[in-house]
Image (tube, rainbow, N blue to C red; front, top):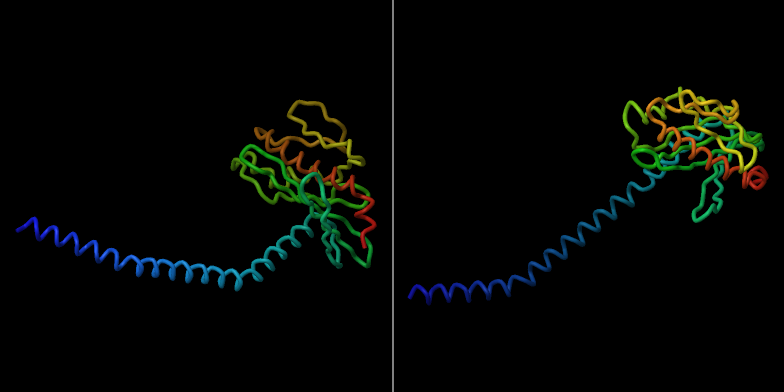
Length: 214
């Protein structure tokens, strides 16, 4: 008798499972649709605010790496290798004050991304560290003024010239091209400097086009 009842229970459960499956699928589908709709609505509601915030922060950084100006910033995308590089052209009274661009290189903990401000005479006005994953207290010092200030005034007037990192005790390569490494963070120092070099090389390769931009 017990076995018969158990068999009947199993049959009843199987029937219920088959009957409830479409309902469960419908509920799951509705949940996914509602969830996706909510995410889409949230994105559409906030994307303008996010884009405005990103643009504001970007313009604030550009102003840090270039001389003070009261004009407009225009962006020009130029193909370099397999990607497009942004060049931010700052003007005042229709004269180009300087050009900022972004470059990155792998450091000790990950990508080291920098923004470099370059004057029309090819000298560096300023640099800012945008992104890094370097060791706190060591490589992270690349964000500090002591390290970054070394780049101001450095000049590389051709794509063949680059800045060179000087370790403690090494002979300098000339004031225009030498950068003192951060103590115990040579890899980060080199990555930062190589990123700056990339920016300089890109600028030199397209200098005429950039300075004649309308």
